[in-house]
Length: 177
Image 1: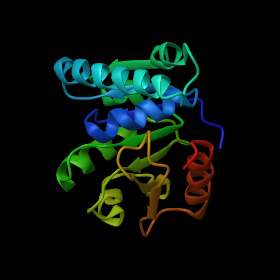
Image 2: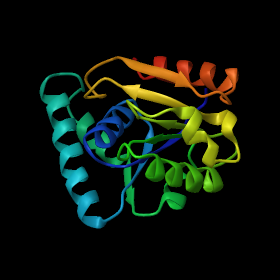
Image 3: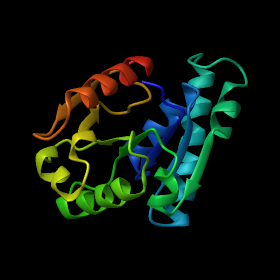
């Protein structure tokens, strides 16, 4: 899978950790959340995580700065996903919230982009009912924190294509998962 840019929707514990991992692996990442206040907090958490990874030699000297420079921040889902090849949603565990995020992301993301959810309890079959391109949606639920634990559960919905699953497996392997 040829991923150049990733969108992380939701910047809480899981979202900012996904962004940490992705930026460490060289990807441009746009983080989206509902307010500048939440983004500011996530920025600090991401910076601390990158510094930790460098201090513990998971990154070479100076790579924390380079990784942090690959991050952008927005309060607009459409802006976050407009050039994304892969979208990782990590918002609260409520169908109505996740469905709205997927609906907005589906409308604004390029047709080739994969839309993944970090959900640990909700059904992708139900979430994907909110989008037009159901074949590109699946669950990519990480073990916490994603930037440290190299495990992820991939769970397709009823309408998820085999191609989406294969591309996501390939991408997760590129991330070291």
